[in-house]
Length: 470
Image (cartoon, rainbow, N blue to C red; front, side, top):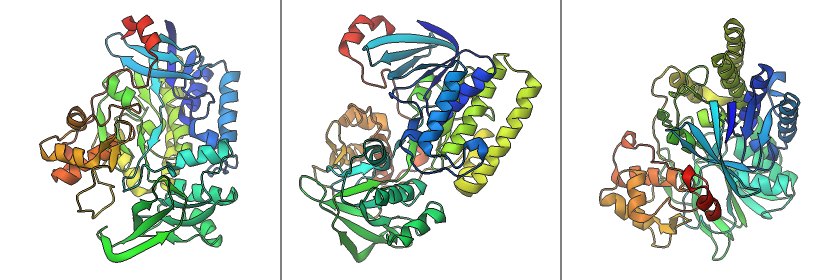
């Protein structure tokens, strides 16, 4: 078993920034990440970042990741890459880890733990969404920016937030034609500067428009877009068919909160911040005295915000361990929170800023809203899948809800939706929204799903050898 004063799960912008802050205070720190490269989402970001020198403005995303990692290594931070955290055991306070290189299981005992696990991409359900060629924006960036693979020749991007707009421009840079960017809202979701760049390249941005269905038998051959009215309902006869071979979904992120749920953190729901997330105070400390959060897990925002939250969490842990003078910590904490306020004023919008402020003060930060394709009233076909791992169709889930299932766990027990390889990370949000859509009950009645270890697939040989860990 590894014993350390501080451990961090996640080597993205938040985790790396927290590690640097801890190391500067003289705290021995271990960073665990399941990827083979540190940096998290920064690895696939080739555009130059906005902001100030504190957020390394003017550098490309992958360069920021490399710089943070180099600084952490220089300060003596220990890294375990290719290592997944598969569970938190509340009784012992230990963290279960899986070294994927050697297929070994182990335990980590840390006096303080920072979860910087990031977020997952939201799926968008529509007929044909399981066809090859439908992918998330993160997968698209990984293929194009990291592996230099073109996932399509002509694409449509769904979602006009900063991610969708940046991905569309990066597709153009890679020689991929962008047939359109569509957005269900009547306004642009991201910064106008990104939208203007696309318009200058001749890319149409279709507002109040979403995907009705993907076309194709074995792979994507086209897409049907539908125009929405002011209430988000499809306009009669307002259809547009585009010939494309890929559909890129950039419809938001949800915090990867499984470990926080497992640890017993008090969680709240905020639509503006991405869904269920751990409640935390102004130092990023959760309801558990020894556990902090930072980055997208603490509410989906920007990479620059994640870095500042990581610094704040590292500062909070250093302070709690007595490694930093209280007065010095308070003064530095004020400066970090002031920069966070400026960042949220400039990039996150008033709704996200308000939700975050309410969360830190201990209030309810937001409300539920369904983001399924609106207005669909026909009975779905039996083969229209929601849970792809277990091949559970939408019709079966809707039937379970009509028969009384009102939570994700209840639907899972009746249909196996969420029991597959991804552990429900892909379909959980869709099932939650289906519960609201089919039952008509106020979504505030929904509760977070039950999560047990392992939250990542483990080798059977390792389980047999280390069965006492479970």
